[in-house]
Length: 296
Picture 1 (cartoon, one colour):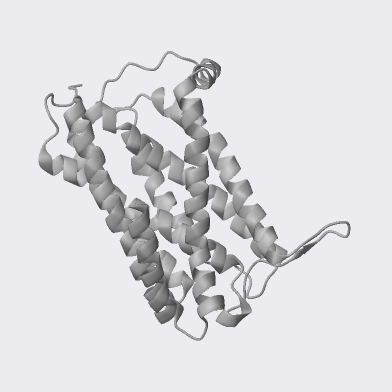
Picture 2 (spheres, one colour):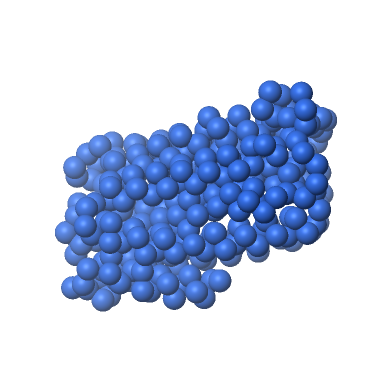
């Protein structure tokens, strides 16, 4: 089977591939901005929160702490599946190469489980809702990694020069900012006009659409015959932990992501509880735009 064309990545393919960041950042920032608020909606917002307080007799957690623990546990499990899926993708053989099958078949589940996050089954706070949210969140993170990890791994396989790679990363930044801007500006009015369910469905469709647009753009250039990685999973972990640059970078990156995520999740609470008496969707984009601009 013929391999991908040689030479620089054409401009059109580059734009299509990087346009995925519009959808993926719209999904990621919508989750960061609204999910915690959705789980523990303040009473002032007039909507029942799906997550209850947890009372085990010897231990009582209010709904805010319980929801925070659910989300934290979800991210911990997500961190564990990342290297395993990367190892699996590196060793996959197919007529479409080792990355495309993951992106092609996992992307619909990535969008589906994101939409399902906003469809808690119970009308009032209950443990059933908490279990549902945790399971769907884990499935969303898994599908996100199955689709997004191999998609990102295509970058060095289709861009063979430093110039090409830097150009792709720059366009990813621009499209990512556009996706984040859509999340901050579009989701609030959607939530106010309809509800969280409609908001989640619209953003999920955006994520699905742009991921497939990006895949279509890179499909002709993706390698079909790539040597299978020889390093085993245990040896890969060992090599990673011996990389001093990575060990220095990791805590900084984690703390940065944590601080940005906390600030983003705080915005709806600030608008509802501190400002009060205003439409949430009108003010979150304004304050969030300042946050986005500062982050850029």
